[in-house]
Image 1 (tube, rainbow, N blue to C red):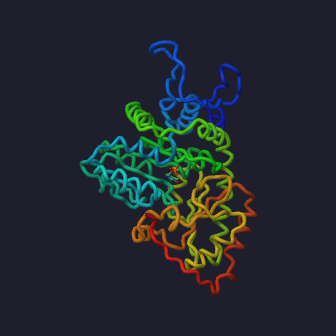
Image 2 (cartoon, rainbow, N blue to C red; image 1 turned 120 degrees about the vertical axis):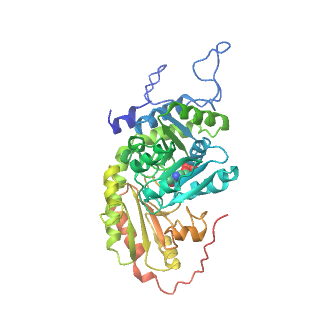
Image 3 (cartoon, protein in one colour; image 1 turned 180 degrees about the horizontal axis):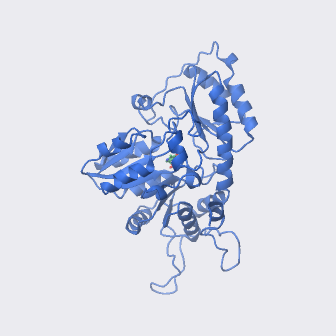
Length: 395
Ligand SMILES: *Cc1c(COP(=O)(O)O)cnc(C)c1O
């Protein structure tokens, strides 16, 4: 079956007892058992829930993986993957990373003496050089957030496997519609399903997809033993969102390309980061490992941080908010929002400075979006504005 068909049908048989075409929301904490050790496959809802099973099977099929596991958030999914590591182990990660993932590495798993080194995301040889005898995992996010740089998944997978190391890819930005890391040699895919997979900005969720049975059993054990499971209603909403993933992603991408082209010509825009533009440094790699370039566009504004503050207050169709991947368009200021937990020097060294804006392009009419950007970026407003903004790192 092809992607759009799987998105609608995989894991979702009509309910056997009633014929209901939609998977029911099994809003229950426990399941009646007939006798000692005799039940219908479900005992307690932390361990398993039929609505969750449907979502997990569907996600596995979309990523062309054997096993799927869903979690209460993207970070809970990442934490479950990191539970494969022991004190003394080492992670090699790309540097241009979701802020919460960086915080998880540094301030949660770091306390268990699991250390992380960061490699410039596109520096394939750098990953090999950073490997130590205790390295157990390579972690990639591609395309990255917020600069949309790419890592060569296939090349890094080869390096990982030469050293018997697991390769994890955060596929949140691309989604399986545009990129299938397991097919390119990755061992584990993680998602914040909060974003495109659910697609409607109405829940927090995460997922892990993989092929290896032993690794699956370990992560599944953690899912139940540590307990960061999603509730049945959120799982059901996610299943509902997935049904339109293919059409949504096509429209996100069409709008994003139009906006990236518009911004490239705009006099108040210094530079535009979008892998679907021929000017993007990873344009060729994007064409090789992705079937589309997605819906995220970042750009460097020409002006001061005060000007940026004025711009974000002027949007009428776009909303100024964290997060991404919903049907509505959002603008975010990474330095103070998503990447606020990364120390300023480290953040700026990675190119995330105070005048960078990131756009999650929604599926509204592209002409309305462009008109809104145009009025917000218009020059006349950047005079005499004196707001004092001192950007400190978030705690
Ligand atoms: C949002 C996000 C996460 C974290 O997911 P939550 O659902 O917010 O916990 C991880 N990785 C990327 C790339 C994200 O955008």
